[in-house]
Length: 188
Image (spheres, helix red, strand yellow):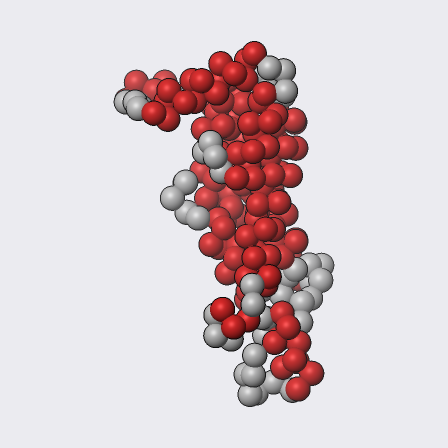
């Protein structure tokens, strides 16, 4: 990546990493603010499902000075903190009966999730496996699995631990993919 205004050593570094500046450790004030922003955005995106956490984190990985592994962890913690609300809904701790009355969920996903719930109730390790797959791959949808985990009485700490691990791997993989592709693919 020949930017033209960077010293040769930084120009070479930017060409290898795709970043315009060397990374600073997350302990700096700027790094901590970026991690807090990643946590906050992912927390909100967990509740408001229309906000894509992956796109935000990928953008942050490109422009931020914080290493992607730390951004992925902050994003995973934010996502799981937000999904704990869905878990508590399934558990019955938060009761939104007025939403259930207006819900008209029908179709294949409802039938499939009923099958998944039945399967999870038959297998002790079922909720853990479904949570791990959903947290990493997103299928079945992680929001639905969060409610399901509460419904089948999965331990909250186990749900949180498996979810953080799965989301961290997912976000880290999303941020690592552009760096694994050849530079010629994007014309850089």
